[in-house]
Length: 69
Image 1 (cartoon, helix red, strand yellow):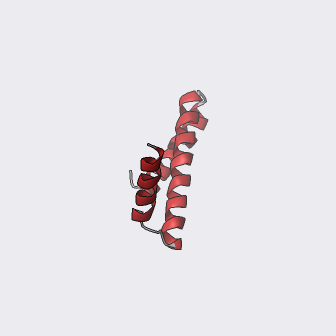
Image 2 (cartoon, one colour):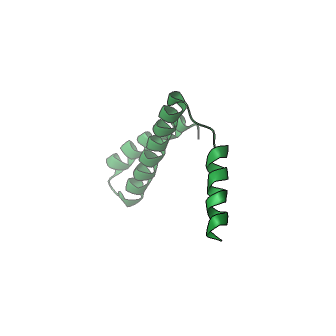
Image 3 (cartoon, rainbow, N blue to C red):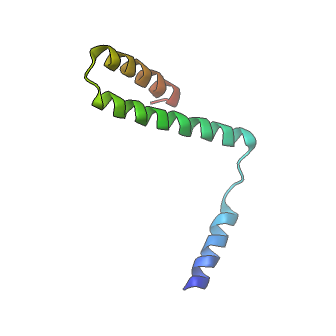
């Protein structure tokens, strides 16, 4: 069983395409934007101050635009 798992792991890692430096940078940026969006959503849910909520809603819209959502 372990040999099968090791073999499957080798096949899947060999089948993966190596990312270019540009692709890695884009993925890292997108991951950062997605994390920021989740944090802003969480803060928005917890906030009751209207001015803070307005600021968070603007930030959320900006992040969504950057992500293409």
